[in-house]
Image (cartoon, rainbow, N blue to C red; front, top):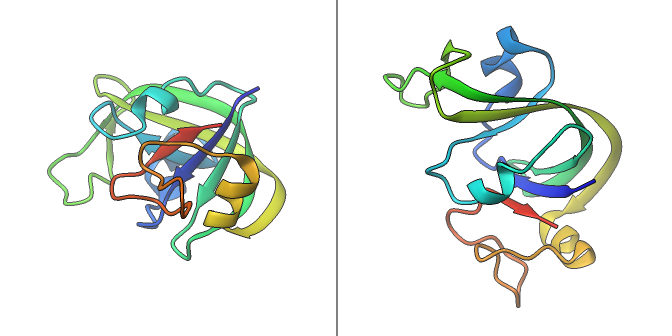
Length: 135
């Protein structure tokens, strides 16, 4: 089982965007975004921890489904509408919360030894472009 830390500080509404594809969407990413190499290895039963808009890691999720090749409507500013479950390059993971973490993300990063080129190793602060790290 692998563990992943992802950033949703922009408060993207994954559950609403992907509701027609299933319940409990946690996070999405495409190959052009930082963290893709790690995120592309997520499988069912892995664990995902999400940094929310308040810069906290609140919940630990267990992955229940992974969907690849989702096509989003790029004509909308936030690409927040699914055009098709096929023909795109977006990967979406779905899951269920398994326990509460309730921790500021830098503390979580230090306690779990999370490493990424997009996390400052001295301060445990995210750098611009951080999306995902496997730990």
